[in-house]
Amino acid sequence: GAVAQTGRTTIPYGAAIRIDPMLEEPDYRKAVLDYCQVVVGEGGLKWIDLRPDRDSFVFDQPDRLLAFAEEHGLEMRGHTLAWYAAMPDWVETIASAEEARTELVRHIETVVGRYKGRISSWDVVNEPIADHPTREAPIRDSVWQRHLGKDYIELALRTTAKVNPDARLVINDFDFEQPTDKARARRKAFLDLIRELKARDVPLHAIGLQGHLQGEIAIDKSGLTAFVAELASMDLAIMVTELDIIDNLLPGPEIERDGIIAQRAKDFLDAIGAAKRPEAVLTWGISDRHTWVPIWFSRDDGMPNRPLPLDADFRPKPLMQVIQDFC
Ligand code: XIL
Image 1 (cartoon, helix red, strand yellow):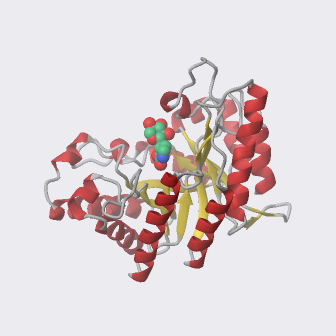
Image 2 (tube, rainbow, N blue to C red; image 1 turned 90 degrees about the horizontal axis):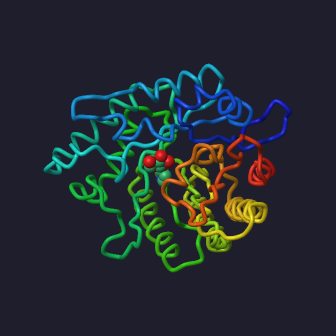
């Protein structure tokens, strides 16, 4: 990790940001500046935001977040270049492998090239593993997978490395930490993919563990530690990229829930750290005021979700303490 001003060795902490509210809300802005060393756009660099049509690139949002980051000496990560979701409709008109290759390469050349020297850590491929991977179909369906098979992963990594040889290249994925057959199958499929990329000498530096934890499910600590140890043995760094605790199925009063939420994060971080200290820890948002969780996983009891380290009024919760202790 980086050496902070105190001289203490720390793992950089950061959060996904919604640029417009952040610039408009002083308490949001202050929280980011008080706590973060790294930022990433919650949106903005996704195809749906960047590519309204085949011939346009709209860089407005990421440009503004990057200007903010640079003004305040924060690092900005790039999320993401090749993903199945948040795609504009026009990509469905891509009709051949040749066309898919051309579009993916052109996108990466344009976006990574534009931010060369300024954004140097990229979630090149996001969520490549199928929800329920099988031997026959380990890779998640996407426009890229449909036309190029799993080769799109190698293509995206090699293209990013070529455009920016200094970029830190990350494959980012989720649902590895539950004590379930599904998570076991996902870990296995993921390791198979990474082993194959390594065997082919594909450039790749780090694995992003998103960490969208499910509040009601305990972490499979030994399974997760073994998984991270395998990745580390392939000379890969680890990042926690999107930590939050999805609490729609977590019962009990708020104070108890906050404790369980913090404990889940602690178990997750400790299990990773037991094999390899992550090089950064990012949460997917910083305050319960701005989080995707209520939109996708709202609670039945009408109570607000509390997935993030600061509450809706930007006051720290036990989860923030866990992160600070860990980092
Ligand atoms: C989510 C955003 O938070 C939402 O605002 C958006 O509507 C959908 O995407 N994994 C990822 C992130 O890699 O990009 C997702 O972000 C959350 C799950």
